[in-house]
Amino acid sequence: MRNAVSQGPLGVREAVVGRRSVRRFLATPVPSETVSAILAEAARAPSATNMQPWKVYVVTGPARDRLCRTVLEAANLGARSDEYAYMPSPLKEPYLSRRRRVGFDLYRLHQVAREDVAGRKRVMLRNFEFFDAPVGLFFTMDRDLLLGSWLDCGMFMQNVMILARAHGLETCPQQAWCEYGALLHSELSIPDDEIILSGMALGIADEHAPENSLTTERQAPQEFTTFRGT
Image (tube, rainbow, N blue to C red; front, side):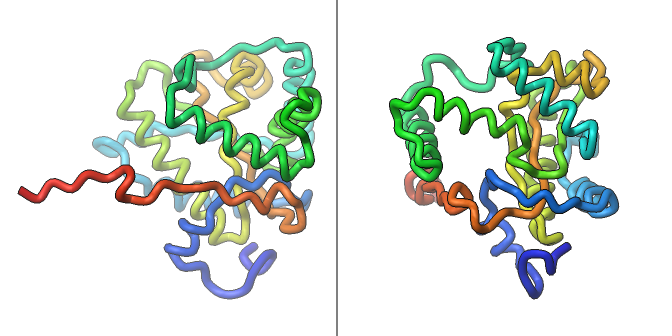
């Protein structure tokens, strides 16, 4: 799949630094063998005492489309069933300003004004179409595991996002799906003793989509790093 979007090998630095959350994909199918290869490579992620707590559910084709319809209907009705609390409420600074900035920047690319509530909802609901990506991934782990396993699963997910790029694909991590956890458990037959950590869209980026031109800001190391030498 690498040649689908660019030529030549993708270096580690380019794979990491060039990663972004893609919000419109081409409908081009992704072979199941490619998905399996990415997951096999990503499974080299570290985990405490090699526990490997991650589990993955892959949706494509009619199963994907059915899930999208079901969750979109629930979202339009406001029938949330949050799998877990992702952020504190209220959210303090500087995190609130960073969150608002990326939201406003994204709405601008969609040509949606800040006061356009219906337009903002329309943009948000694109999550539940996987932004047109042909593959949806859901990451889970046993519910009774503790915070260390969340770290392990996060490193596994990061590997998936980086390694997808080596296969000519892009991703968008989508915790938004967890706002409808009960439906995901039901539609995907995910046991109740597993907690759904996040969804993820996987496919070939539509490089002509305005929303895919978004470049988010990052803090400089001196703003988040403290060195202790003595």
